[in-house]
Length: 282
Ligand code: SAM
Image (cartoon, rainbow, N blue to C red; front, side, top):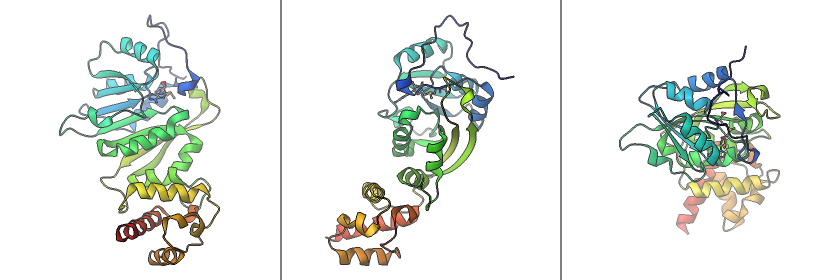
């Protein structure tokens, strides 16, 4: 029998689910337990939960004795959670937007990095992932739930339709594994499709050398803006003349007639480093 998480007889009134905040609440305790098991939590850990919602996962993390920061954008839910957790001094509810939040401020000086756990709101899951990757110096591991289609794009290898910027950056900065697949029935309201939980172990430094991360982002987004076109066409604005483009591609052994989705993460880094080198020479 499925164990449910929230005791609906609680005198603290549950706010209704809001679509605009991507609220699909996890209502299956076994699934919540499996998610937090992935974090191998110790009492000395500091955990950030993004979007605690009704607190289903939050309570289980708190039970492990960790310090828990729970960042929730919805004012009514934040108020509900403050009341729910008022007796626990290891839980702090923060009302705020994960897209703007300064994660570094949660770590004590010289303290361990954060473990991030989140059943991400589907409507802003991708920008939140990119924000977390920007803040990666403060993060050790992330256990994040996405819609299955988004999770497939994140772990996609080159050569697939699903491969793109959403695969390259997470793979450049972390080791990623698919850990769980959850059906719509474990959420309320139920989404239309399956969800997947990914475990990200952040690397101390990018997997491949990157001379200029902003430039790499620019190259990747330009290359994928017309993914069916040859790179010699899409990326020509990065080179002063055609001859330089050919020389540069040749120096990193990439055929300029290839298309964006065929380049590995390493090849994108090499190409971007060559362009960076050209720019510093000019
Ligand atoms: N963790 C809860 C669970 O598993 O039942 C709720 C997950 S629900 C899919 C996503 C949660 O993220 C909601 O509580 C929603 O209000 C919150 N949220 C949405 N956008 C947010 C943002 N930009 N920053 C912080 N929280 C956000």
